[in-house]
Length: 223
Image 1: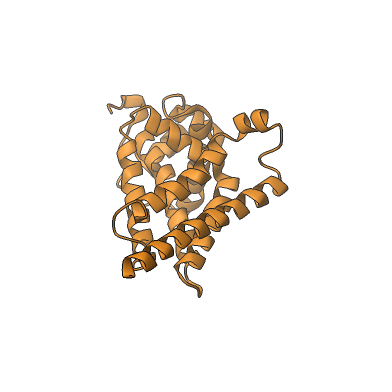
Image 2: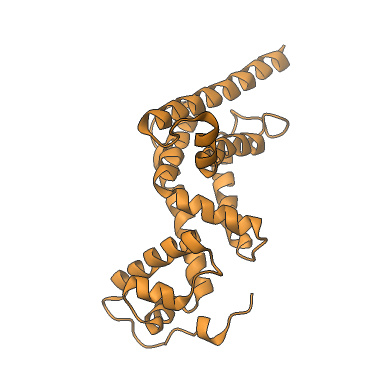
């Protein structure tokens, strides 16, 4: 992606001030809200600066370019996921119990961060060069999950880790990406606490059904 001179500028090599961290956080949060609301192309550095209460020069100083800022917003979204997943599997329990906790934290994460999911979907749908950044971020999540369920989930076939990831992540992502449409179809609130609790219970049922089938297949193959 080619960046115009107004949207890209090198950060100065001078020493960073002590106020860098708070300023960076304000810029990143403002950029996240705007990117999610109007997309990458629809968001200007000037608008980000105005929302954050800083100058355009400050945005370039801390992030170098709009493209780098956008990538950092995406990186932060996936980095927090990895942190939550790591915490979720730290406790006791078999792979199915750990998978329940992973599903719970991801589900609740999207309750509060649905806007990021919509941003990711828009990037992937537009064949944006930023999709490479998303692939780079998703790959370690899949590999991490593969290690967590190693030995409990087949390496290949319809019950493999690839299908487990796509099925569970898809069941969660689709709920949030289509919530407004589903409300009109089902004529009920999809984001109420009652509806969310019911959906979370269904996701547990889904995980249980998958692991039960894996156990059944393993028993049959052992005979």
